[in-house]
Image 1 (cartoon, rainbow, N blue to C red):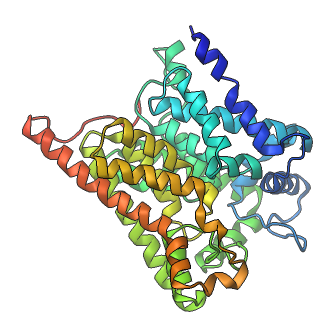
Image 2 (cartoon, rainbow, N blue to C red):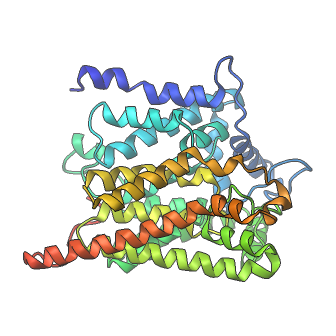
Image 3 (cartoon, one colour):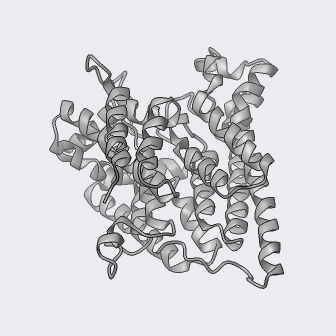
Length: 400
């Protein structure tokens, strides 16, 4: 039975999400949600998914995302502006509850994260999918009791581990890093299920829209993503690869180097996750992989870094060494305050930053990379401690 504080706190994330979406008087401008609705309408009408009118934002996700967006059409546009932030508030609360925030703490944390700015604010304001994708992957794979399991102990989950992660991969490819990570730590069954679910969903989309699927995946193999022309180097792109392109000043000449930087980020994330998992920290390992889905992507807008807050919270809860805990807190603060947005660098101006401006804009990815290295070192210390008491490598399940 929830206590009084929990009942008081429970509405707060939903009210916060509505306030940050449209405020008062109500004036929502969820431009990305409009793109998802338009794509779903195009799917039903037979209009090409990737053909946009001048001035329209492009559809940048795989064709299955259009199928996943169909439920948005159950509501009118105005109703959708209300429903979608409420969904995001519920998922954010569930994620914070899964990382250990109990009772009133989970909804309070979700409300605070939405209200103070940064990724959560942007997700609800723009109508983005970052929180929902985080929920699909993390709630699917994280260890610990599920909400369903509290009511039905004999059947704690409706779907096998990996299915929701696979659907997230089919919607936006970056969660594929979870499949790689699951294989790396020896959890082959959920990895195979996630990979199979992603392929099945992609195949369904191919059957429904073969021309759009051939166009999207053909362009992807050719290195041509359906992004805006300055996406690779815009200052709000906070991937490690974008830092390289801005530093080089020439997107065409430095594109290969940027992809190498993204591969380095992915490797650092996977090494940290593997070490953390073996050291008995599977939840932190999953959250690090979540961070990697942005850090290692060629295009990682600031609203995709929803993983940083629960990651920092878990590091603080586990009483990591003070320098590591401080680094996690600083990185969370950086992704929340986003001081680099004060630099006016629209368009190609992002390729002509001063050294000081480069340092400000690029500090976020570097902090993330250092955090991964610090977590790897801490995990090795924990591993030695486990070995000293005869526990050996972790046998914790990725999900329960």
